[in-house]
Image (cartoon, rainbow, N blue to C red):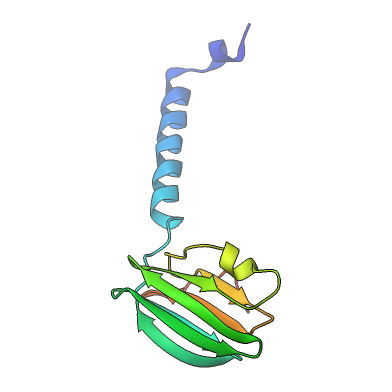
Length: 124
């Protein structure tokens, strides 16, 4: 006897409804909010807040040199940076609220924000 022979119609209904519920929760709760603006910091201090609605390129000074931030089609990225390993440049385009790119050696960061503040973890 297989396991499928022991499953009754009510069990199938429960499985289908639970599966639909999980998919619905995933689509509504796990998708990120689209960002409205980018918060750019240099040396830990606010450098500029810019809207993502206008395509532009911003040069941000840091201890190692100039980092270039590109904003295009409601997305942002660090296009170039003088840091040796280029991790922040390789991160690519950011588009959802809460995403961030950090260039630690040059102390430059770009964070996308929306209407609601998102948290990576719960805080006390």
